[in-house]
Image 1 (tube, rainbow, N blue to C red):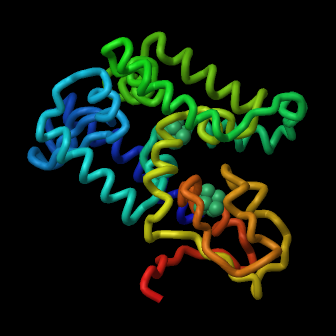
Image 2 (image 1 turned 90 degrees about the horizontal axis):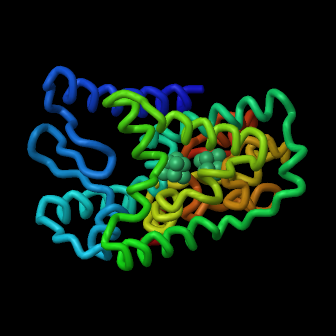
Length: 262
Ligand code: SF4
Ligand code: SF4
């Protein structure tokens, strides 16, 4: 459970820093998940939000550009899609829905609902097109992630309904429905994180093929090598959540650093 506890501490800690800045003026991390300032001087910007601004015709300031570059380099080179499992507050909601779903054994409706994981990439593209056509940051306007984050930092209003809808969608309609199929921000980080260094590695010699990792993995396709070969999870959709590592009693899955030189 050490990774799960670490993830929750990180997610809640980040929200706490925003609240400290907003309520008490402690300027360690100010702003919101789209655009922040770390320690009063280091800009951090969501590169997908910056792209929407660009397509909407907004002027991209140097701060926003540098902030987006820092985030892109961090996730693109090192962390992969870690934003989803270590930072995004919506992940706590969807993990809760998944846990409850497994405990209650709910899977009835999903068998009749087919969704492609590519929907998120289509929504990503559509967000940019709509931003261009409307002159507005299209996904940012309706993003449940921003709604939840604003609600937690500044106070929750009707936005709570959006969070509940996603919770019940994941619980009753489709396993990992929002994060694994719909969310364009998750799709965006899947794309930029596919060549990152931090990866999960599978050791086929230790694996007893119990498939517990596939039960808990929110992106089961990335574990296609289980029962077949020793190799790294290379697909960008892996969130580096480490759930597979935690449930593997054979120590067949572990974090590893991808080696591009050999
Ligand atoms: S897929 Fe979207 S909502 Fe889910 S954790 Fe990632 S960014 Fe957050
Ligand atoms: S492969 Fe492991 S680390 Fe990657 S998403 Fe699945 S459970 Fe999480």
